[in-house]
Image 1 (cartoon, rainbow, N blue to C red):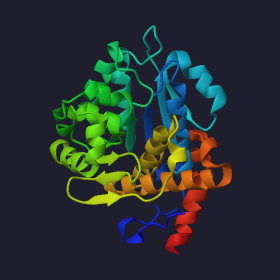
Image 2: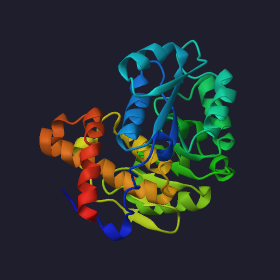
Image 3: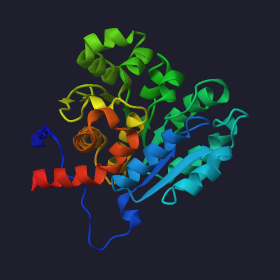
Image 4: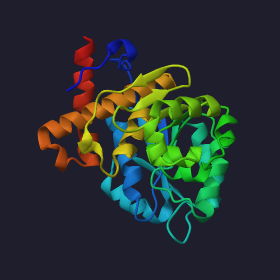
Length: 291
């Protein structure tokens, strides 16, 4: 496993002997739709596995019974949904209110852009004030309108793969891949967001500083891996790390968990839940590196 450059990464959040769940933050995850329920599940489980105190998963009410029966540790917020099983516009007020009670919000994994849901995401982005992590369908909702992000009052973290980076910059995935760092830095400066451009050597930048990650492997190229990353970063923000530090460390720990999974299972057999299940080992390994 590739060692971290510890000078570039923060220590893990403290765990106090005399503490309770409220001391470790509260995360709201707005994710999942019919056929893509797993996106919200992966993000939520990863957030809990990364030490956050409470996860509240907002999902279409028609999917709520599935989530509650499978994931007892996750609190759910059933919201109004469309006939196709995606969040509906009527959920807007409920979600804005829920966001006020959290330290970090994840928006987009497993959400379609068609109909009500795309417009709902566009409206929510400037209305959410805690740190907001944007992923998945939210990139399609934004399109090339980066001012939607720039007008936000709270910190924003973007976690695009090259195709999504192309979608919000009006370029192709191939063009992004040719000049990964240039695209990431430029978009971070224009939007005022922190960008984690995923892929081999994930680039994390706030437009000024740049961190190039060295953990991770090709076995992590599997559905749901990015949802796990959102969960890890959200938990670190929830526990009090500044958003840029949380993103750098989250990317590293996510890759390290993938390395542990590949070492045990082989790269061909790794799935997203394997990465999430090895987050505790990744945290333990990282704590040992810093001791």
